[in-house]
Length: 388
Ligand SMILES: [Zn+2]
Image (cartoon, rainbow, N blue to C red; front, side, top):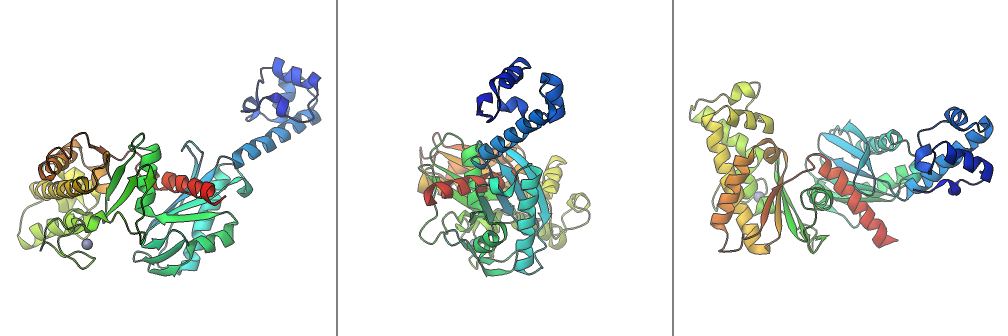
């Protein structure tokens, strides 16, 4: 941080007084107001006020080199965070997506959420260098267009352009799972490795690939669709139209379907109905964890099967790409304990080629819900470097 000599117009006499009072650098002055400065140093109030003003503008100058806003845009909520260069979250804002509203209204809400995050950080819009957004896809990261987002019912929405019109800040867009993978790679579980694959298990299953330290998009920007590798030919139908995809075996929707069938069609006894407030249409990840911990046989059986097929999926990924690390994340993984991860690892080793899993770390995601906003901010910074 800059020292006191950076403050223009402060004479030698006053600079000495500041130092004597213990103010060595501008950082020491950030939380001080003019009155307090006058009391500490005896500097007349108008000059003290000028010094504070000068410090604020110097801080703002430095800020403009440091901060970007990362946005995680989901089907139900929008998260925005002002983020420093080292990945520290300085402020946060959150709002409901209200996806049933037309895209223009949702984009207004995203812009409002970004503005709130900037205000919460005590910054001006002009000191934000860029905005990065992770959004559901398929999307075109180059043009910043969401091609199709079933959760939102969006077709060909030029999100980048629309937000740049509203905010006047350069905006960059990428797939939400890619963004989460980048977050874990730069500031989470994947720090220090050169190649990794992120597998996120939630309502669906998504994946992101880091190769040689960079996000890999693929020719049609669709790389990493790990949820649709086939792990059981002829298995349950998947939303994509195929059968036996990993997503159809191990996602939260697949887990819910299987538990529901065991209870409603096969008449198995389970406590999960009470744990999930009588609802078997959508079983929360936290409920699954509780049911396993309570020894619920139906849930344990389904979760063992879930882990098995995740392990088989990991084996396929490691056989094919042999990355240094696999990061498992998403609501389902985060809710369950080490035993679940251990079982995934066991099946991965069993199904991978000999020696292929040697030294390949299976880690769990560290950043939780923050992976999206942090990763989006990292990608926005990278875009700024490449486009400037
Ligand atoms: Zn599929």
